[in-house]
Amino acid sequence: MPIAVDIDVMLARRKMSVGELADRVGITPANLAVLKNGRAKAVRFATLAALCEVLECQPGDLLRWEPGVGAKAEAEAEAEDTVVE
Image (cartoon, rainbow, N blue to C red):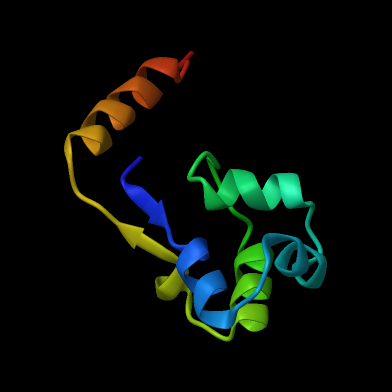
């Protein structure tokens, strides 16, 4: 996926565990792991805002775009999944 998630970096900087972050944000550790490992398809702005508040950072500190072949292939795959009637 062309969007990289840097929650690990911010956790290390804040010396905070995944469990503590999940508790403070109000999401399950499993859902945080999905986001942290880049497997999430979406993130709610409310969740992103809570992450930024707890980690005292900006959204750009947690998310970044990585250009590459994966972006085009993924966009094409998503377009094929869309049904137009």
